[in-house]
Structure formats: structure tokens, C-alpha cells
Length: 214
Image (tube, rainbow, N blue to C red; front, top):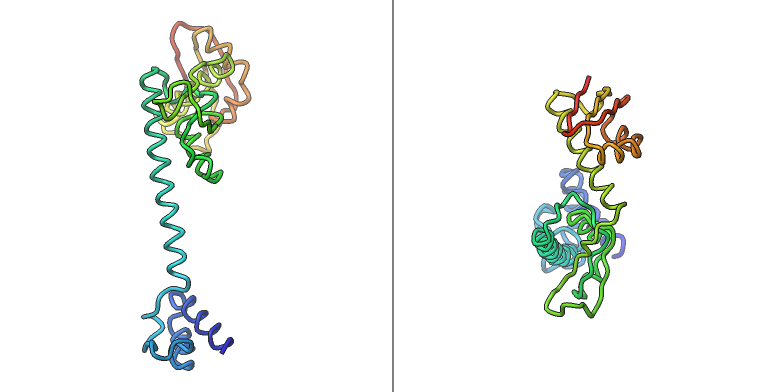
């Protein structure tokens, strides 16, 4: 009985990939060996093994994803009210939504990426108890540098696209930048070259950002 059960489950598993051999195994077993009254003429009419369990697990994931989207939407609205652009990294999001403490790392990382925050923390008590979340909008010098670097990377990538370059194409760049951005770019030159696939960079100061690639 155990062998018959195993063979019937295997025939259902391989049915989409090996329809003929799975059907032969199924017919040799006389249909469903564990449920004679529910025997079906073909393995291709059977349910996928453990179907109910998989649907239940997927259903929980769908519910969690709905909550992730809602939290992201609320946080982005806070950014808009605070007039902090999404490309500017922030240090922390604090929430009194207890469900967030049950999320696995993949979902938490998704929220971090969408909101652009370094940490997510649960707290039962917030200063404003009418609020569900609080964004730390204090921008440290380090966070400001990171934000400027991200903006510059985006502009270089846009210049690459305009020039019709492929991701693998290594080119040299001439960057004319305002003083503050120029200092950040020079400080993070290696990261800038790596992220934008540049061979070398020539820097100069300018009132406005200008990017030339060749």
C-alpha cells in the first residue's frame, strides 16, 4: 500500500512533464489506490499533491503582501508631506503595527527598499498615538552624501541610456558638478565608477551638473 501510494503521488508530480509514462503508471495502479471509490480514469484529472496546503501558504503570502503595499503607501505619503524625495535615504521607520514583527526578512527588505530606509522598528508607543508610523526625517551628513551620490548615479545612468550605451560598455566620463556634489563624487569615486561602469572620471567644478561620456 505504501509503495502504491508513493507511485501514485510520483505519477501526479511528473504528469505535466512526462504525460505518457505517468499515465501508464497510474493505469497500472488502477487509478487512485488509496481511494478506490474516487478512482479516476486519468492521472491528468487528479489534483496536484498537497494542493490545499500550498494554496493556504500562498494565501497568507498574499495577505502579507497587501499589508506591505499598504505600509509602503502610508510611508511614502509621509515622505511627500515632509518633502523628502524617495532617493534620499532615511535612517529609520518606527511603527506600532504589530504585524510587521511577524514578517520574514524578504518582506522587511522589500519595505526598506521601497521606502528607502536603513531600519524598521516596532514600538507599541509612538509620540503621536494617532499615527501608525513615524519616519525619522533627520538627514545626517552621511545620509545626505548617500542621497547626492544616488542622484548622481541616476543622472550618469540616464546619460548612458541617452548615448545608446549597453550595460557592458565601459566609457570615460567628464563630470562638471557644483562644489558640494563634486566633493561627494571625488570622495566616492570608486563606488561611482563601479555603479556606472566607467573606466575613468575627469572632475571639474561648475554651477550646474554636466555629464559627458566617451
